[in-house]
Image (cartoon, rainbow, N blue to C red; front, side, top):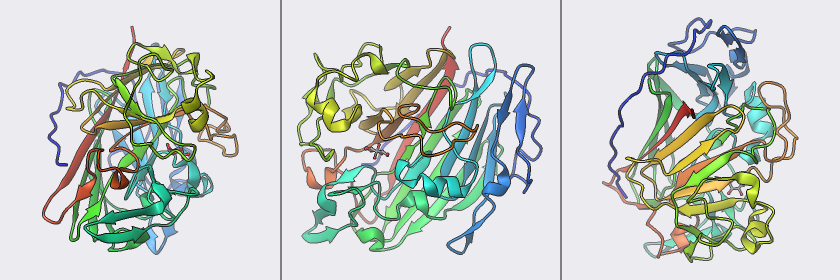
Amino acid sequence: MNTIFKTFPAIFLPVCILSLAACNHKAKNTPTTSTMTDSSTTVTLPPSSGFEKTIDGKKAHFYILKNKSGVQASLTNYGAHLISLAVPDKTGKLIDVVIGFADIEGYKKAMSAYYGATIGRYGNRIAKGHFILEGHSYDLFINNKPNTLHGGEKGFNDVMWDAQQINDQTIAFTYLSKDMEEGYPGNLNCKVTYELTDDNAIKISYEATTDKTTVVNLTNHSYFNLNGVGSGSILNHVVQLKAAGYTPVDTTLIPTGQIAPVAGTPFDFLKPATIGSRIEANDEQLKNGKGYDHNFVLDKHDITAPVATVIGDKSGIKLEIFTTEPGLQFYSGNFMAGGNTMLGGKADDHRTGFAMETQHFPDSPNKPQFPSTVLKPGDVYKTVTIYKFSVEK
Ligand code: GLA
């Protein structure tokens, strides 16, 4: 499952000035909310104090990445979450496009939505929390009845990672998932590196090694609203997915094992379409997912061309996704229900964010016909995903 990646040329886009101090290192423990400004707007960052906590006996911190043009991301080593990402819209105004919370309690409360989280050991569902590997039977915690979702009871989204800020634009998080943690075999050493590049992309690189044969499927669960967090529905965002097939699911969101053509269905995003144009269609798969909550089988995944493009209808902000992963879970925020207050003060209402989780396919440990998620001792799990932002002219 090793994958090779290339970087693509950087396009420098000057934007604005930050008023933040200490951008290049761990943020200072300031009780007040930090802001970054340009002539037209103010983007609110969470108070770093919301993240300076001791969790499970380890120190959580708040980190900021900043590129040469002033674009900025914030993160925490609690769950290796991406908290916010402010990028310029068509007028040059900085807009936070990633849903996040003001403090760790916000993440704990909204845990089942996995906002901005690093997901592991296994992204998405494993049927009935059970699989057989090299003749051994493994049972996981059933946290999404009747299945295991996103790692189990305490996934990588809810553990403390060690952080190493490498420079102003790069931070690495490491975590040792112990043998049989959540029922998975093998001590798994994981590393997730976030780099905010000068062409306004977040590049996420994943690495893992094991001492026993195991299964691994790491991803990031950021929810985007390209018109800005809290700006309302994402149904008018325009999506293009370079995927001629997808994996249909049963009513518990486990793939049936088939790869079905998207042609002639509401899953055809080969040509750009708004998220909302067919989401209410009378379609069994849309009913099973309560909207889009499906794995798309990417035509190509060699990171040289975008596999997905999404444009915010109001902001003009364009998100392009590049990945080495064979699949992409397009989730249209169907379970968002307004019960959480996002950074910026608005509620996380139904379908006010969408996720594009690059991954291996759900339930691969039980689907030998899907690309393998098995990692053996001596092999290195290595994947890369890039979320690149620009403005549609
Ligand atoms: C994934 C799943 C969804 C949902 C979200 C979190 O995307 O596929 O069904 O559980 O995570 O709410």
